[in-house]
Amino acid sequence: MKNYLITITRVLLTGAAILLAAEGVSSANPRSLSGVVQTGGTSSSQPLPNVHVSLFEATTEQPTILGQATTDGSGRFSIRYTRSTSHSIFFVQADVSEGVEFVTVLGPSLPISVTINELTTVAASYSMAQFLRTGVISGNSFGLQIAAGTTTSSRSRPTKRIHCVPHDRSPICWQRA
Image (cartoon, rainbow, N blue to C red; front, side, top):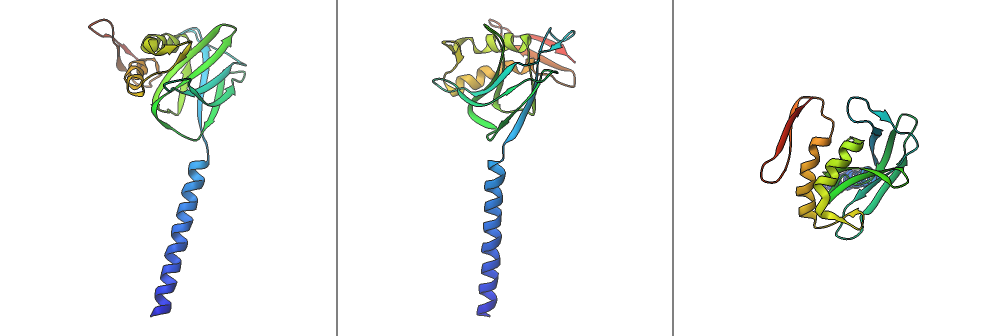
């Protein structure tokens, strides 16, 4: 009976060790944020090749860079990351040309894919205006998350939805496919 208990204990400990090791491996394996950088709005968009794209996490000071990539000939990129949630917010920045940057605010959780263009930049500028410090997004994480909630209208959606952004005392809303 004693040998039986020792064998069961060893099997359970071995199983636990394998599960813990597997968990450590899966969390260490980076995942990818894919996306496209384009110009021209929604009806006549053109991909932007060879654009440097960076994934950031906003903080109370300078944002933390989490990954970088360069777009291919179709304006597509993929950035590997190890953490998909934040106590603050994530955003991506595309350095289109000298003095021209496009930005998309992603919020506290990373999506599977993202579009970066003029429309997302306007939405990011509007929602993050009070958090722009010396050209970067930074500030209180709670406030950043609330402000990031206003940019969801800029993300592509496959179904028709109503999108709203705050404006003075009443929101501006529209329906988009």
